[in-house]
Length: 79
Image 1 (cartoon, rainbow, N blue to C red):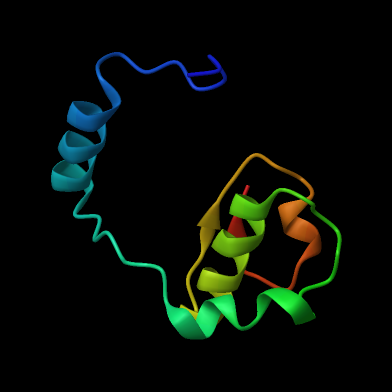
Image 2 (image 1 turned 180 degrees about the vertical axis):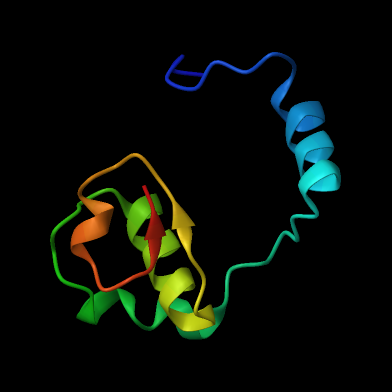
């Protein structure tokens, strides 16, 4: 909505299509990941970024990002 990520079509359609093409599995927010929020270093203040980092740490996932700040956490990233 802020125009930071221009998509070629409606986000709902685009995301569903990309998940099918790339065999991406959507996951729900894990309660155990949320418990890591208070111990996560305060590098980023954005709550969504922090939750994504905690989820990645909890499930041993890799984050695809262009945000250099996320790479400062002990989480696997593709940058």
